[in-house]
Image 1 (cartoon, rainbow, N blue to C red):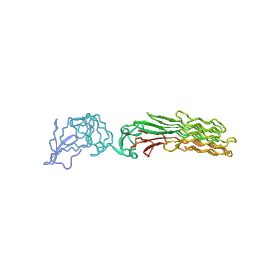
Image 2 (cartoon, one colour; image 1 turned 45 degrees about the vertical axis):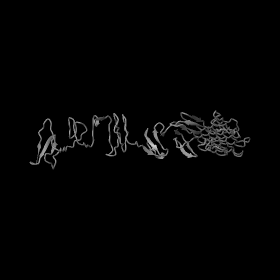
Image 3 (cartoon, helix red, strand yellow; image 1 turned 90 degrees about the vertical axis):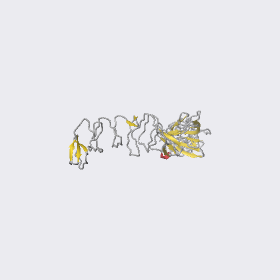
Image 4 (spheres, one colour; image 1 turned 60 degrees about the vertical axis):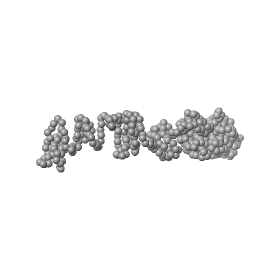
Length: 447
């Protein structure tokens, strides 16, 4: 430390741990005799040492006892090994300020041992959480974040609250389901559902695949329930003579008040491989009567496949359509038509069976009916329509064993009547007083 170049009368400095005072009359710095208690009596004390303080034993100014200051204290940083006090009360938590004066951004937490009696007037923003051990009194309004459904926070934290302007309610984020959950009075309401499994794949020179199992109904819930939804995939079609097709996979709607599982459709038979059972059974292999069996229930999910050269069993009851039987030789001149699907309350058909294929020159391939099943062919069988649970069409023979069509993937649909939307999940549409949630892939439905 060096002496100031333009000192004032009685200015004191510390140089090499020795106190000097400036006398303007003599123009010289004089040592101050050390005593057991040095007292600075001047109105302005300027300590120009620059040693940083990070503890009670470091820094340009060190005070062994307490420091009583009646005026303001302005500091670049404040350290404490004990408590902060305000109006005689101790704050037990740490306070870390990173924002500028006026913005009040907190990176630490604020712990209160008692009530904040005067109330908190509000902060403009908080970079971290505020943990409060006692009561928090708010004299003004509590302002939450506001967003519409499309503008929700992209990286929400568990328990985060906000007002959704699209639906008109407060919602919170659940880290368990990774969903925004509405907060409202849990008044009971009814909803209808449709669950369709994936359709079975078609055979090679053979029959169509069975449609995925189909179930529908209605239930009542008081809200704040989470339903786990699985949407099944369609089974692969047979690739050729020595390759069978595969069954479709299950779809389900599982919750505390409802548990529905539909079985994937059975694969269609071929020239070598037999059909299998499923939600709806696959059609019999070329020249055979060994049809796949559908789930009769109760409740019924689907129907049996057709025998060789014949269509699937006709049905008028709910359930997946049975697979079409195959043709393909001199006695089986026509591929069977696919079984009819079921028309749900939304007007669309689901779970139609795949049709049978034939050998070129021996007859006509079968055709699919309503419900998304694939047509039969002399070439490659047609795939079932995606998200209908339709069975794949049977392939034919044109000098080569042509592949069967893949089954169509499943679907889960939930719909209800409500003045304001209550459910969350899937693709949401509104028409005719109904909200409809459509799931073409697995997810969850929260009410």
